[in-house]
Image (cartoon, rainbow, N blue to C red; front, side):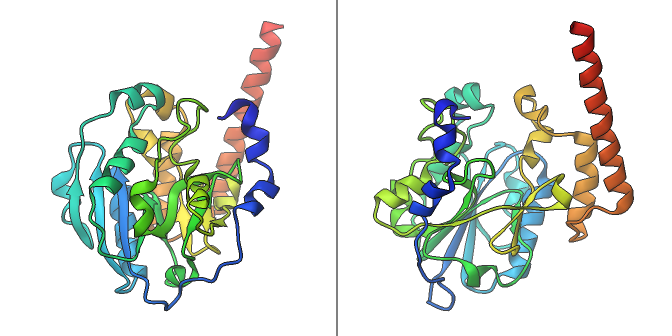
Amino acid sequence: MIGALASTFSEPSLAWRLTYSCPVLGESGATYTVVSCHFGDPFWIKHTLDQLDRFSDSRVESVILVDQSRASREVLQHLPRVQEVLSFPVDTAQVDLLGHDHPASLNRALQSIDFTTTHVVILDSDCFPIDDSWLDRVHDVTLASDPRYVALSHPCFMVFPASIAKQLDFAEGIQELQMDTGRLVGVQISRLHHDVHFTHPTLAFQGYRGHFLLDASVYHHGSASFSSSRDSRLSVQVDRANEQRFKQLVAEDTFTLPRKDLLQLKAQGLRRRASRLIARHARA
């Protein structure tokens, strides 16, 4: 993802330098506006907002959605706690580069919103609370770390003061360092002299899909929108058939694979490995 810099950003020591001992907000009077971008399968944004509504109290004052699909406003505006649905012109340069314009969508949203809450919560459309303790676990700045590079932030889950929202750039690094959306937001916030607390992902579904965040009070499926993308660079990253089963389990609040599904996925993995070995032998 970031070429020669990958080893630097995967060092836990760098993550530690960006992670300070700062108290959780808890009952501090903090209030939250949730911002999320919808793209692809509407199941995920609907489930995310249903779960958000289920596991959040009045501290979450509103949800503002960005219709990144540019075709779902009617559906989105009726989801729980939604105050506004935004839409922006396609950033064709980003789509050409990444297959999507998530960085531009987040940047435009944060620049255009007049926040009335103390904090902003950024959620991917497939990232949602699964426990009502999640708000009591966030710090003044809480960022999900990238699963592969622990010192990089991930935009699936971010909490930060509304006062710095317009100073953040989710597109930094996407061209010059071949990064994905928001990976340098943690560095940017640290430069603004705010303490940064990373929440590191742990595996869900026995390591086959998704991650838990924030002491397992939040779940992130990961790349869920890619299965419905017309861009082969994105759609190839997920198995559409398997995704249907994972959606069923997620809808049932289940994040552990039943034995039958686990054996099936193991068998798929063995078949893929055998196919690669046969192809490699044929080329030799």
